[in-house]
Image 1 (cartoon, rainbow, N blue to C red):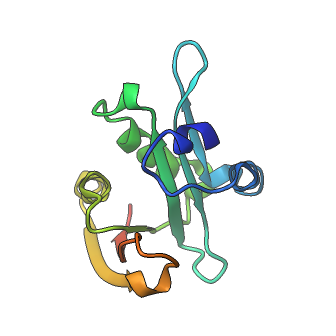
Image 2: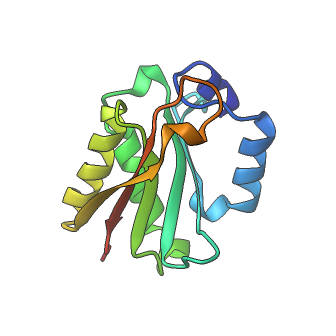
Length: 145
């Protein structure tokens, strides 16, 4: 995961973060491998302690060789259909205004599940250190099922 992120435009986190997420939150993380068992996609997500009916998607990564093939949508649908997600009614995530691919992905999830996609202001760019991080918009998809 860490290598896939470091070879992309995603926000970079430590290798420890990815190990921890997959260990502590295995029920809400997804990995996709190709026929040679190479990691080609992932979702890191968790259920916030104060929102037991929400899964918050922290990061989605797809190898360049797999982009445009619907892998991110497949992984999201797998996530919300898992037995461990039976109480999940909403998917939440934050997305920058320039990340049109992620915006489309979450809108498509809402459309595929015939539900709402609410977009709200979330984290202003002033909250991020340095000068190169856009604001983050909150996407809330649901209710599911």
